[in-house]
Structures are given as structure tokens and as C-alpha cells.
Amino acid sequence: MAEKRERQIIDVSSGKSSAAPRKKSTAKKSPSEKKAKVQAVQTHAIISAENQGRAKKYRWGAVILWLLGLAFEILTILVVNGYLYIPGNTMTYIIIGLVADFICVVIGSQLWKKSNHIDPASEKNKIKFFLWNNMGLIASLICFVPIIIVLLKEKNLDAKTKKIATIIACIVAVIAGLASVDWNPVSAEDLAQAQSDAAAYTVDGSVYWTQFGKRYHLTEDCQSLQNSATLYRGTVEEAFEAKRGTPCKFCASQEAIAEVYGEKADDESTGIDLSAPLTETDDTVDTSVDGETITYEDFMGDYYAE
Image 1 (cartoon, rainbow, N blue to C red):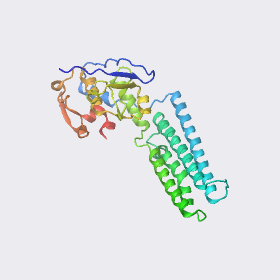
Image 2: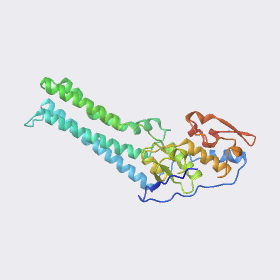
Image 3: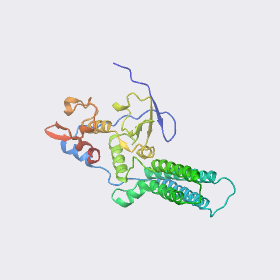
Image 4: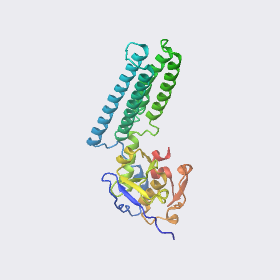
């Protein structure tokens, strides 16, 4: 039998290495209790006043930076059309303005995305959810499209300056737009589900993630973490802030099974092949347990089955 790999578990809140808590064990429950357990989920995300305050500061910081970016864009436009005269090379001033605009927009977008992972919007309000998760992209369009249009239409610039400046503006606009998009947006419902699962399937609500992984895990013993030398441990809220807002389906299902059958659950007692890795196609596999058909959906709820 292979030796268990030594690993370092870093507590996010303190930055220190620490041991993982024991997994929760429970007595075997009846089929009706099993289904009730997994369906009793939180309906609203619990966000502390401290986190709400932090999210608000990040959003104000983002807005201020976007306004600064807009100011640099306006100044650059004034230089391009000649309303603002500054002695020297016009190309140099255009590049400086575009770079300053770019820096403000991108940093502002990162702050906004960070705030969304601390205090996410609800999917129930579709307009707000769309705007909240695309505000960075909207800001980048506002801060770059006008200057590109001005550069294309300006007749007083020499052909070389106009061509180079337009190309640079288009490049920084595309990069800023891509950097401003939240490719993995989360909702208040996602956070509520995660908080509910962590409360149900862990001892103290802690979850785990790796430096490069995209998911959080309910247990350090998850099969997908067996080769990871360093793990980060924190609350669900800290995992979401670290952009690990997607649950690992394998360890989540294992924890649900252990919650229902106890830590000594095995293939024979559950009717489930616990050693087989869970894949995206396993979401609707039925297993007969105690005379009742229990699906993966019964264990983890609609959220994981989507």
C-alpha cells in the first residue's frame, strides 16, 4: 500500500500551516431522512457585515478608477483633435493616455470582480445579475471605443501617427475587455448552496482548494487532491473570493454518501461504486439503495445536477 503523501495545509485567514479537522460521521438514516437531509438547503446567502463593507469599498474603488480611465480617454481625445495643445510628440502623449486609461480600467475591473465574489448578485434579478457581472466589460467599451472612433475619423493627424495610434488603441481595448470579463461568475444562490453543503458535510464549514485548481473541495481526502502537496483551507466565502466558486462533484458526492450511511460506507452497503471517479456524465446515474432508487440529484440537489 502506497504511503500517504505528505502535504502542507495553509489556513487562508492566518497564513499558517495547520491540520485538517476530522470528517463528520453520522448514524445510518432511513431513505426518507436521506432525501430530506440533502434537500434542506439554504435559500439565501449569508454575507457578513464585514464582507458587505469590503465589497462596497472594492466597488467604489472600481468606479473611481473607471472614472479616472474615462478622464484619461477624454484628455487623449483632446490631444488628438488639437483642442488641448501640449508641446512635444503627439504620438507619445496618445500612447501615454491609452496606457493610463488601460491601467485604470483593468485594475478597476479586477476590484469589481473581486467584490462580486464576496457579495454576489442574485440570479433572480436577471438585469442586475447581467450588469453586475459585465460591468468591467461595459467600462472598457466606454473607455476605449470613443477614442478609437476619434482616431479613425481625425483628419489632422498624419497617416503614420493615425495608423499606429489606432492599432495600439484597438489592442489595448481588446486586452482590457478580455481582462475585465468575469469568466466564472457566481451568484448569491451559488454561495447559499455552497454554505449549506459546507455546513452539512464538514465539521467546521472549512473547504479546500489548490493553487491552480478551479474548484473547492469539502474534504482534503478528495481523490482529485491526492497528488497535491499544498492545500489552502478556508471558509466557503474565502473560497469564492479566491475564485473557487465551483464545487468538486466527486468529493461532494462522497461526503453526501458518508453523511447518509456513515464513514464506513462501502460499495456493498450503498450500492454505489465509491472507488470510481465521478465524471460529468455521472450526474444522472441511478443506484438502488434499501429498495429505493436514489440518484445523484437526490444527494446533491438540483444545483449539482445542472
